[in-house]
Figure 1 (cartoon, rainbow, N blue to C red):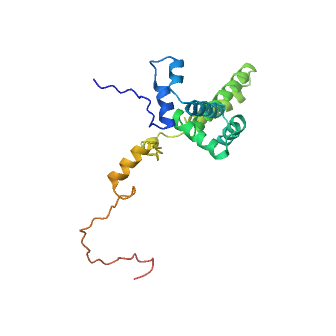
Figure 2 (cartoon, helix red, strand yellow):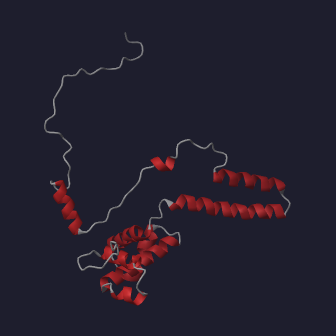
Figure 3 (cartoon, rainbow, N blue to C red):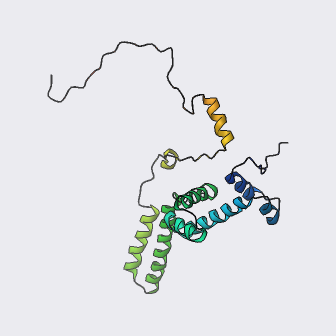
Amino acid sequence: MANNELKLSSSDTHFENILAYYLDTDNPEEVKLKSLSKTDQELKKRWETAFTALLEFRSPEDAVKRLMTLFGVSKATAYRDVQRCEMLFGSFKRFDKEAWRYISIERKHKLYQLALKDKNIELAYKIDKEIDSLLGLKDQDSPIDLEKIQAQDYEIVMSKKQQRLIKQILGTEGAVNMNVSDTIDIDFEEIKRKEDGEA
């Protein structure tokens, strides 16, 4: 049976070391912390601070300001920390719209309960319709699942060793030549569409 544990190595990047720290469920906290270098521990603390700021529904810019104030890092370093935080813990960008929708539904549900308590049936009906529209109950279900065909962003983090290996495989500094060397040119005639009214 293969051992798939992530081990810390001196050649690994800080990101890989911190990721291995979070994935290690076998060792106690003290042992895991000792396995990180001082730089790794500082980065871990900054990334956790950025994550906490983003959890509080703050913008990435607010998280950057907080990192600059608390840790005295430059703006560029703080933005890199926010980016690494999203790579490590997950992005909030796709979560926002759904989260705000359900927060709005919860607020409207409280108003709905107050309207029923005050026996204001008209207002309760309007609020109920608003909740239905937020849930998308009025909309026709599409036969196509738009989430499946939505453009995906994949962020790939790799070590220098992995980058060198890929460059070596691809041959020419990471570019792939899609041209076939033994192609055959053929004659062709471009066909133009006729405008309305032309013979």
